[in-house]
Image 1 (cartoon, rainbow, N blue to C red):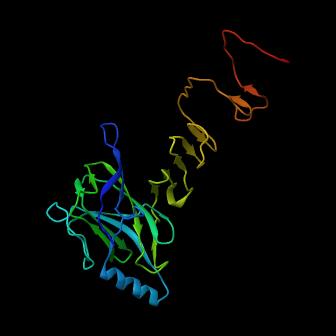
Image 2: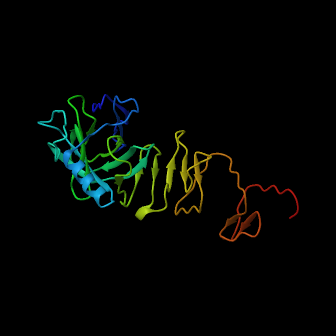
Image 3: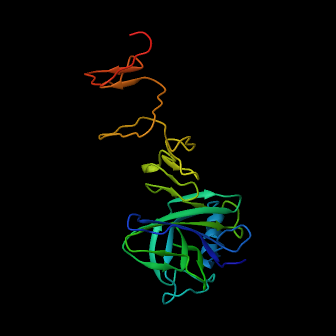
Length: 262
């Protein structure tokens, strides 16, 4: 089982206007997934849970800077990261195939460090799995910069359905689908960005640059620099238009062209 990370496949540079970095870490494994070391204490936790016909639950991801800010080779005897910098709740998780999880987390705060080790922690604080390598760092956490980091976590060595993931946080961010869930679990995919850059609000299939399913409210000006096509009635000064164009109030225009009955 290989446990080396060879490259970082997606890194978005942070400019003065941007405060978010997105990173997707992969390994040299054929399925392009991060292959962690399952710890001895993690295996013991799984065995204990299986005896009670239960499963263990991953709730947190911890990031560390390694040993003296250098990488190292992890092993199954680990019970914690060598130099843990931050630990955060799992933001989102997706099942990929029968034995792979895509897990993401959002790391915030003033801390700054190179990410050289990652730990996956259970709800009781047990370190289930660890990844660390003597090679290049996986990512950099900048000061006051949000880091969205995602891993394809291979669990081939574990019994089926023995590991679950808790994503009961207020906001779920999924890097693969570029989606943002609503607060407290709903609605799912409230904001969605597809691979063409189209934005959907209330839909995962935006058919235009901005596709909104639902009402739109603005308290300021709305400027449109192109033609407008409206399917339905337009109300100005009323939210219950009774005609294709219904105006409550005065109309001022330099010219007016009317086709049809008046």
